[in-house]
Length: 284
Figure 1: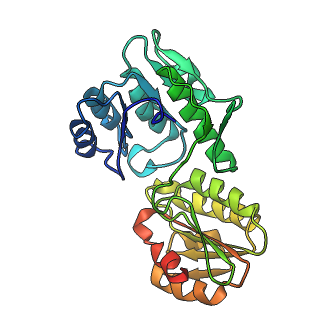
Figure 2: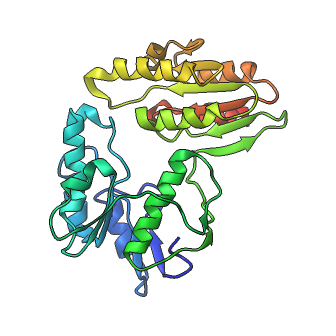
């Protein structure tokens, strides 16, 4: 949204930590006008450290959900950790946040809750979560005085939802870079809209803490309502009670290759540590 009107540098790949974020900033050309920086968080104080380095004018929180509970323990702790970004904004800065966080923004900071419509902006996706992402990005662009127009060409990061059509007409949705209960539900909602038979290959969701079994059981019920075939991968995912359960990505790759029929849509998604790219690569 910014590139047609500003000289922009954005976080490449996953360089979003106390090492990657400074590298991104220091590597930006001298004439850069806007830095779009991702800030990673697995524990308290980490976003505050990154914000002290970046000194942001606009802070964006896309959502708050049950991720990294292994270290943070509760949703309240996750919320507080993400709000470190908003607290670090300069006076007069802008916080783009979900509605449930709007009353948590400090005085002196403008609050924007994404919503409404995209105006004359169009995006090459029609899923609900990508539309919300686009509305959030639009609010951030407007906060620095840019009004985007027309089609926004979006190149998804690797393994973040790319669709690959196979020779037999089946489609693989390669979304195996990472997973948590919220992103799993969003991906399954999108799978439910697909024509033909819907196959969900779902692996362990990691770092969910002591309630991890409950999260997997609930996700399994959600998946069975939206997919015709559910294949689970890993010991945690077994609690999803799918149609097939295997121990690891290698076994999943062999099984799914036998299961897939012409015209199927196959969603492949799990936390990074499961390595489900083996399934997507085997199918392709």
